Image (cartoon, rainbow, N blue to C red; front, side):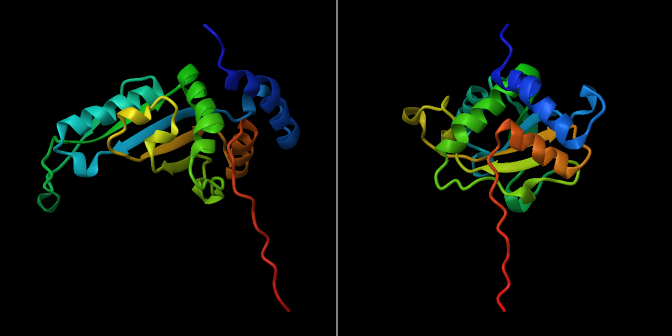
Length: 189
C-alpha cells in the first residue's frame, strides 16, 4: 500500500519546520491532523428518496467511504419533520483516506472553486480545528458534471492535535491550505 503524498510531505517537510518554529523537544509533540469530518444536511430533500441516493452516492465518491446517515432526534411540526427521519449524512476520515482527501481538497478542489480568495482565519476555533463550508460538491473531480442534477453544499471540519490556535494555523499553512492575507489597517491622520 502506497503512502499518501501528503503524509510523506508531513513527515519530511512539515515536522522539521514545526519543530524549528515552535521548539518542540520531540517529534511526538508536533501537532498533526487527527481526522476530517464531512457533514451534509439534506434540508429540503428530506422526503425525496432519489435525491437522498444522489447525495449519498456523491459523498461516497468524494470521500471513498460510505456515509453514515444522521436521523432526527425529535419531531418538529413546523418543519414537517418526524422523529427518525434522515436529516443528513456524515463521514469521518482518518489515516490514508484522510490524507488523500486533504491532498485533493488543497490541490484540486480549492483551485476549482469560483471566486475563491482563500480561507478566513476566523474559521479556526480555540483548540485549532478548522471548520469550513463548501457551497457546491461539483468542485471535487470525482463528481461528474453530466450526472449533476442538484447542487448541494457540505461542511468540513479538519481536527488537529494542536494545543493552540497559532500552531494549528501554521500546520495547515505548511500542509498547503490557502489562507487570506491579513490586511493591515492603516489609520488616516
